[in-house]
Amino acid sequence: MALRSLKYNFIWALVGNAISAFCMWLLLVVLIKLGTVETVGIFALAQAIALPISLLLSLKLQVVQVTDAKNDYAFGHYYSLRIITSFLTVIVAGTVGFIFYPLETALIILLLGINYAIVSVREVFLGFMQKSERMDKMSISVAMQGVLSLIIFGIVFWVTNSLWLSVIGLSIARLIVVFIYDFPVVRRLSGSIGASSVNWMRPIWSKDKLLSLVKLTIPLGLVAWLAQLFTSIPRLVLEKYGGIKEVGYFAAISSLLVVGTMVVAAMSQAVSPRLAVYYIQNRIAYKWLLGKFLAVGLLLGILGVLISTFFGKIVLTFMFKADYAQHNKMFILLTFAGLVLFLFSGMNVALTASRKLAIQLPLYALSTLACLVFSFLLIPKYGMIGATWALIICYFIGTLGCAIFVVKAYYEKDGLPKSAEELSNV
Image 1 (cartoon, rainbow, N blue to C red):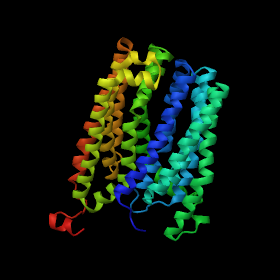
Image 2: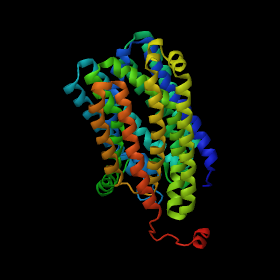
Image 3: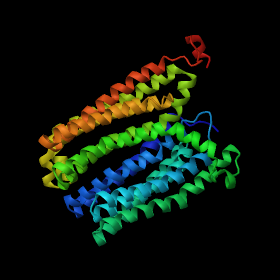
Image 4: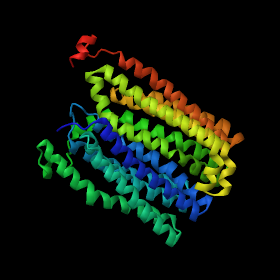
């Protein structure tokens, strides 16, 4: 199967992620425009509980699937493990919600757990499209999900003003995309590898393989959980000391970073498979591709800071409501946090491509600890501004740690060509 250019894959990934991210942001705008700050706060708080659980149990299998350059595991292994972890996501999210939170919030946590479980299963199919470097197919799927989710959520919330019914609509939208698009596309793509689509797409319940895969991916699952805690911890601490309204304002304004994260996510999806191959075959190409990735992230971050500094109040008033513009100082700090986050994301992709998975756990644990400590130190006194500074410190520690180990991994030999002449012959 001929490889498509990185430019082609990046453009498709960017378009798909742009549509999806824009739709998810508009979904939040629907809550802000039609609902109250408290409604936004409940939704954001439920996300802060359910999403870390989902990411912990997802084990970041899509990342491992995409960078499995040696094909150590079959599609069915990833599929079966996803089914198991998805059921666990629903059970754990529901249990935590109903034990620790009021009924209304607990119900939203449970429903979001179901929604994230569906997303988790979908990622197996998206991962196969991505590994096949068919970013066009993957992007169409992502865009379809975003558009359909927005339409169903928006209509349901507009008609009923019910958050829990609207979240059910999200799950229905994602199931529709799975059955009408993801299944058929992966079935057709499987023919390109000479596999029987009927048997090849079935889960493989191999105990030894699944245990081996879990052992490999547990560090990444913990990393994903810790990474989501970067977002969740400030929201949870804000709810404790400032109330649900502050969570609503903080979550809404944070969502404006969607443009930058969208581009970085698209680049990550486009370069991850190639970066993994370059690390094995050509370290020089690995270095240059990573450099381009980081440069784009830096430029995006600088642009965000400039926009928030000179046009922040206008943006907040236009996008949300007039009362949101009162928090422009926080918006400026959040765009600076976004700049550091983009660099952090690039370094993390490089570290994953080098298959240095275990080292990510202590790095993310250290960053999460910093987020937790500074959230409790700063939020009680400075509120949302304190929450933003906790994020900046957290992301900076993560970026620095990843950078150190990416450089270390780059200079490891691992039986690779040692001289420039040998490299040129790869």
